[in-house]
Length: 136
Image 1 (cartoon, rainbow, N blue to C red):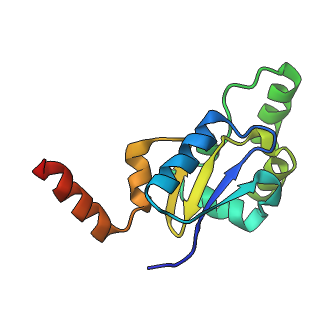
Image 2 (image 1 turned 120 degrees about the horizontal axis):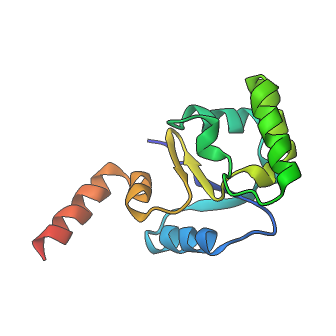
C-alpha cells in the first residue's frame, strides 16, 4: 500500500466546479491530495495516465472544442503523430486534456464520479463503510 498522495491535475485558470467537488470529496473522506496544474505534468506522468485508461487518448482528450482551427489541429495531430509526439503535443496544448485527472498508483479518475472515486479509499475502509451503510 502506497503512502503517496493523490495527484489531481487540472487546467490552470479553469478550476471548475468539478475540481472543487473533487477537492470537497477528498476532504470529506480525509484523503491527502495535491492539486497540480497540467503545466507541471511530465511526459512520463502523462504516459502513465494513458496506460491506466481504457480507451487511450480518447479518454483524456476533451471532445467539446469550440474553436474550429484548434479542432483541426487536434485531428491532424491524432492522424499523423506517434505516441511520444502526441504526448508532447498534449503537454504543449494541455488545455485539450479533460479536467480534472486524479491519479495514485494504479488508480485513475477522469472527471468527477462519486462511485468511481471510491477506488481511492483503502479496501479495508471501504468494507467498513459498506457494512455501516447497509446496517442502517
